[in-house]
Image 1 (cartoon, one colour):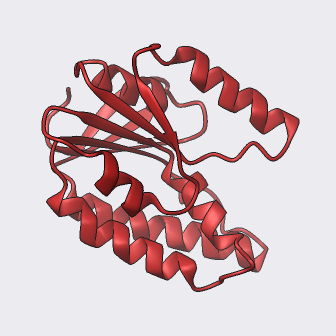
Image 2 (image 1 turned 60 degrees about the horizontal axis):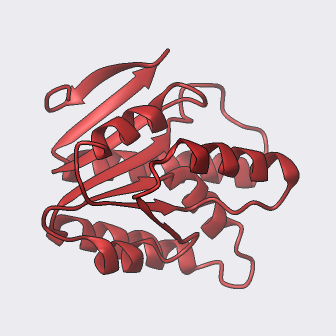
Length: 173
């Protein structure tokens, strides 16, 4: 089962993803965040504290498809939190501006063949006004395109607001 969980900041999407993953005895948490400042370090610490001690964590800010291939197994849940941070990391990689296209395609090609349960968390950023800056507009556009494509490839798509999930595709857990 592939599940995509979308929602705004502090909507409860990560907590829902963690509840879904907790149903499995074997969980790998792929963290895409990079703690580049104190505030982000606090967010990362908060997420770490919430996770059960027996979950394995793999930090991967860029090569997500590779990490998924490495960790996905029958009987295991792999939770990725979150795709929009992964997208930010790739779009901000000035060393290789084309890397996002390569990594995105790798993710989309890899996802259907992965064994086990995959839970993908991402921020829905397209509900507000059109951003003013070029990079910000590209981020919103790319996130929207990624979500639309993943929505067709995942068996379940959930939207979370105020901690309440709404099934967009498939059944509520």
